[in-house]
Length: 376
Image (tube, rainbow, N blue to C red; front, side, top):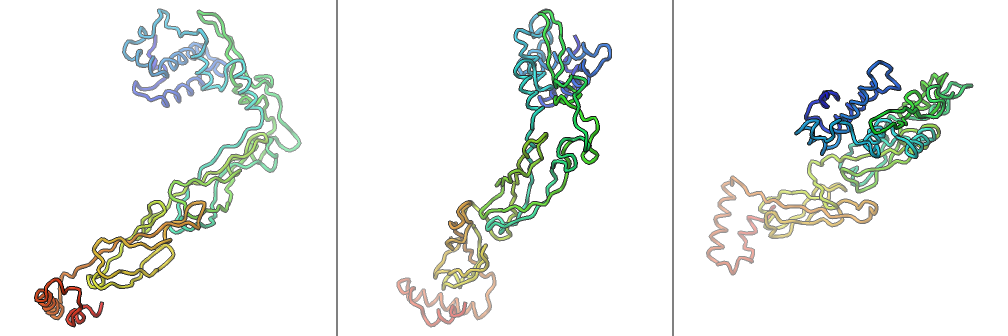
């Protein structure tokens, strides 16, 4: 027996997706309904067996360790008791195997099909996420062809029954095994399961019934969105086939960072630096907020790394923009590295004054204290 990895033309460390892609490609190449070359049918059986074994982690592990002997059975043929293994293979590739499964698959393909959903990634500014806005975007998507109205046929003509499957949308093939014969039912490769072909295709869409266009859309970004927020725009995905409804457009948002503000949930965090004089005496300063410059009171005796709050200056709650978080401001105190002669003299006098009067009088503001700290 040939090595199963060689049959599927993959390496021994190939993952499940690589195995599936290899099987799909080779099954399409050697399927007897498509490939009439001598030996194609036998090769098709071999790659089906190889994928059935390697596609299952347990049987693959036994095969890797013991080879064909580890799979059981002298003949090396698969267990076809309920044909579940091959059913999985054919459903993977042909979207249907026998009975109701094939019937439902055919009706889905021949009837209207909903269009695919689309994803659009949009980057917005920090303040746009806070307050929301209306944005115009351009998306490429499939729209129903206006010339043929989605039929795919040139005006005055229409679809014809597929000669390969006789309009059934499926092809059948009997296969003999040591356990008896069984019938494989697969989607017709000529018409794609629709049962119809376009003899005279529309020149505008090439017989597809849909065509790619770039469309301008205006979308509403609500207040309070954040990175990862997903907006759904109904009906703006790809057009459906054979009269099916269009899919939806999903807009995924990414919010840029602000140079001075940081968001955590509904609250905004920032920092401000004040002088040691402002920290001791207090002050009223101006700080940046999402609403613009705002007044912030620095209370007398504010300590380094103190956290001050501006209420209702945070992020609006998504869906309820009236409710807002707060802005929390960390106060950094800047201490001078150099003093002028006058400042040093005043500070030394103040230090001697405090030392002489004792700590019980430190709350009194002396004339020297006023002289030093009277101007901030």
